[in-house]
Length: 380
Image 1 (tube, rainbow, N blue to C red):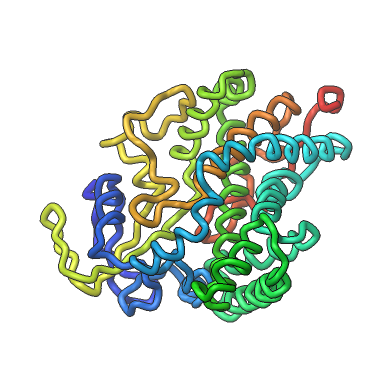
Image 2 (tube, one colour):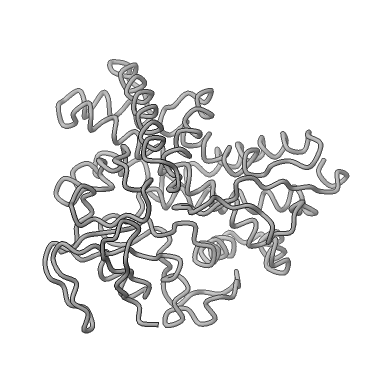
């Protein structure tokens, strides 16, 4: 496995694909590579992903110093400490969702009833989105994140979300609040540090980033455990928060839900181990492959939730753009998976795991739906 390979993209352009974890880590931290989306050399993996959705003009797709300037405005809401403080509320929301599941006649779609509902509700509370609007933004996020959709459909979903959040941020101006959008509107927008367009674009990024990846990881993390009953039992039965935290890290590495969505373009000629990436050439980072790199992870294809990995996985990226919401996502997973398994110890997918239908050509891997059942006497 070479780890850095030239490929032909869907539109006929040439680019590089990085699969070795050390290459991915080094290149994501290298300031000679740009994240700016509208650079002519930026690689895309499909027609849908070439559409200029709102996140493409957000700090996610900026280089420093602009990236750092905007990131500092929201960093306080996504610290490790803030995520720890949210744990009791996350536990409360999980408990309510599980109670609702228990009152229903199985089978129940775990994706809609739990995996999507939890991060959606938590994101609404942190960011300041009315919870009654969560179905609307979930549908528009899915529209933006479906790479095999047409360019027109992707753009329409982005326009809908921008319009909704623009109106929401407007309502928050002059109305002090503790949520992120209120603070953006009444501090940075009010004093001129943010333009209205920047404020709305940041709102879109935070909404998308706080929801979709975590929802997908709850779904796929459960499926990984269901396929390994011995590992599921370890997570379900452990009362040690440190063990559960380590188990989540192993799941994040083993079941990486981000696929081919990290890409960059070289600003200068860059040589890496005999490979010359020329200025203007694009690089796609294959995070699932990097997280299964046998150079870094012995028995990389084995799920062992008790194993302490020799180095960190890359499921949250690396370098200046490392995922801002990683601390919150970790806490949500550490709460959501054990609570689900304990409340429904006989939980199982209705279909064979190999028959579960996944999103087609995904940027973020997840099941379209996941009907689950259980013995009702154990669910009360």
